[in-house]
Length: 141
Image (cartoon, rainbow, N blue to C red; front, side, top):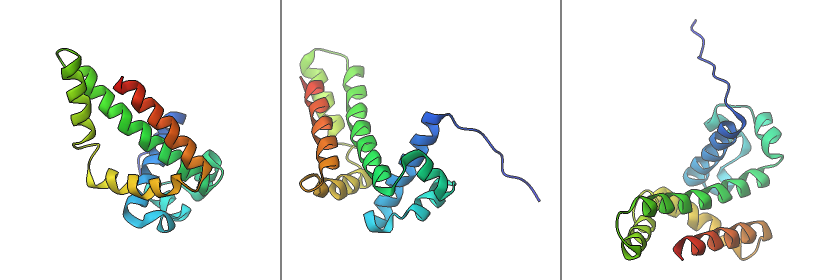
């Protein structure tokens, strides 16, 4: 019987892997179908470890939304900063990055649509959305 290779992840790596597993589950199964058990299975950890890092499913899901928003903005920023040319070229590349893959992939659009509906009714999501939009506008400027 062979044993699975074990590698201890740093705190940031572990949290990122749990957030990414959460986003994959939400994209595949929706918010209701993305159970703690299913997310833990996707991440290859126990449900107890998820609760250790995030406390509750709600904390995990809101953190995953914040991670997604940060990821979308960071991807566009990276692409704009790599742009060679004047401010117009950087702006064009920033906008293109927001309207093409990976930002406009089917999975990310599905995730965004899943979460954005909660923005109007749930304070945690509204706060994340507002902060992410503020960061986006700052980059745009």
